[in-house]
Length: 325
Image 1 (cartoon, rainbow, N blue to C red):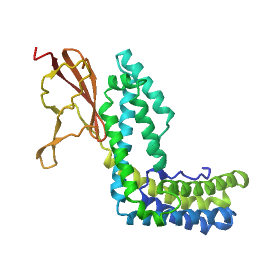
Image 2 (cartoon, helix red, strand yellow; image 1 turned 135 degrees about the horizontal axis):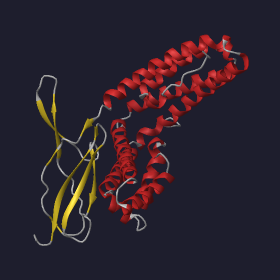
Image 3 (cartoon, helix red, strand yellow; image 1 turned 135 degrees about the vertical axis):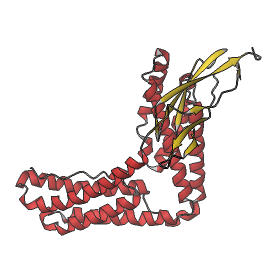
Image 4 (spheres, helix red, strand yellow; image 1 turned 45 degrees about the vertical axis):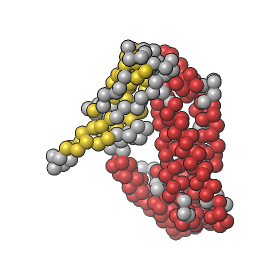
């Protein structure tokens, strides 16, 4: 079998594991420094790992780090949820809804993956996205897709994130020149320069001189990839939302505008010992809601889709009346 370097799934390593993996990888590269024959690349790799570790330690000491990290996670989750709703409506049975979804989707695609951008770039990007989606050009499509609550919450979390950033201004006297995301990226790039070189050398000179390096590097990579995949497997085990209970929704008064109701959704779970518990699901964390016929008097339909730890779909209805009629 041809000698090949396995690819570490570094984007999914948490910060501590990311640093630990690269520290061990550095030692392997240093051990086979002569075969790799690129001392400058190895030195740059060591420097990148050291920089990332110093930033990680600084971040952990910051008073508002946990709040900022939580808020950043929340806005990432909400933005991902918006993308999920839009993508799912690209296949909606109603052509008008599909057109609205395509209109919004094209806009979001222009911004790329904001959840993996640097903090400043993501913050500015979300401000821009929210402003565009609230403009006359997109507001009707947003209302059609039921995105208003999501966009409002995204704007709220982004504002909160900026407040936490401002609160830490005095702490930033000793702030490193790059943020943690950028430091991770630089470390990954430094390793990639080395592995690309080794791969080219294998193709040029044959595998014999590099097989020992490849074996050790692959054992390390496989170990950390297995850890992260097991971790994600436990976290992302899915529960079908279809059997969930939906609390009755009160009659809504006609306003001439779309009516958005967030239903109370709960699901019964049975533990290994047979004990049954009821879990209240959270909108935008556990499920999304799409709406149909939610403007005119009559019966409106809510389409509830599981997200996060939940999958599946179920529907419910509520009535829209004029003065109770």
